[in-house]
Length: 179
Image (cartoon, rainbow, N blue to C red; front, side, top):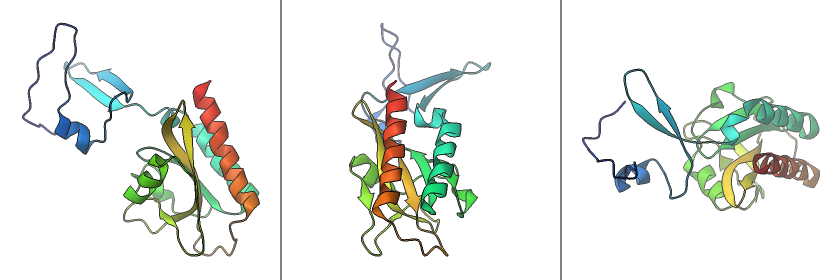
C-alpha cells in the first residue's frame, strides 16, 4: 500500500472525502460504486466495484463462443482490465490494464468497427489490437466491452455477421447486469 500523507476526518454521517487528486488519478467518478473491505489489522480498503469482473466464467464462455462463431480471438474487459480472453492470442493479456485508446472507445459508448488497418490497442505495451469493440452498458453506465481481436496469422476479415455476434454478446452481458 502506498501512503499519500493525506489525512481526512470522518464527518457526523460517517463519510470520508477522497481527495480530488486521488479520484482523478484512479479515475473515480461521482456515483461510481465502491466495494469496502476490512482486514484484521483494522485497515479499511476501498476498491472500485466491477459488476463485469464479478462474472468471469460467463465472460470467458462468451469469448470462447465468439471464437467458435467468428474465427477471431475474443476478449471481454471491464473498465479497468481484460477479464476474459479466448482464441489464438497471448494469454498474458488476462488481467492487464486496458489501454487509454480502448478506454476512450468504451467511455464513448459507441461501437468501434475496423475500417482497413485501423484497430484499437487492447493493453499498453502488448502487441494485440481489437478490430471490433462493443461497449457493455447497464442502466446508462459503461461497464466494459466485448472485443474481437486481430489475429497475428489470421486472414479472417471482419464480416458483418462477426460484428453482429460480438454486438449480441455485449447486449446480453448488459442485460445480465441489469437483471
